[in-house]
Amino acid sequence: MPLPIYVLNGPNLNLLGEREPHIYGYETLADVERRCGRTAAALGLEVRCRQTNHEGKLIEWVHEARKAGDGIVINPAGYSFTSVGLLDALKAFEKPKIEVHLANIHKREPYYHNSRISQTATAVIAGLGPFGYECALQAISRLLPD
View 1: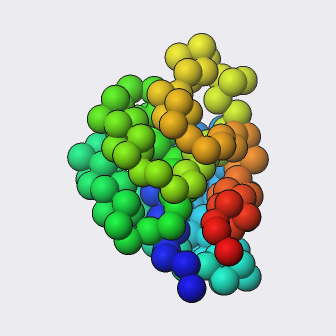
View 2: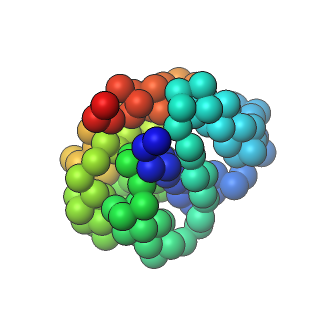
């Protein structure tokens, strides 16, 4: 059995379903986590879903995943565009890592077009809403060694 896949969510995703639903939709983070659990179970994977509004905590979870996980699905939210520390932590994670954005960041204001995290991501999924997490887990399951 593979090690768990870490599903990490950055700042303000605890407000999913309430904050700017015209952009991010009405599903809550708990809904997203349930989707991830169902998808992971169908793929024979285990997930560890976590959310924080603190950059250092997100970095610590990436460090933890280096030893305890087989992949990372990450929605760094606002840290996508600002955090060199998170980028460096993810560079040290040598297994599959998929960056997920609920909205298509390339259709938004120019500030959102350049994710630092994309520099190290195995793949990027943007604009599929919560379904993007499911796609990311499916991709990771295909990238894991047999």
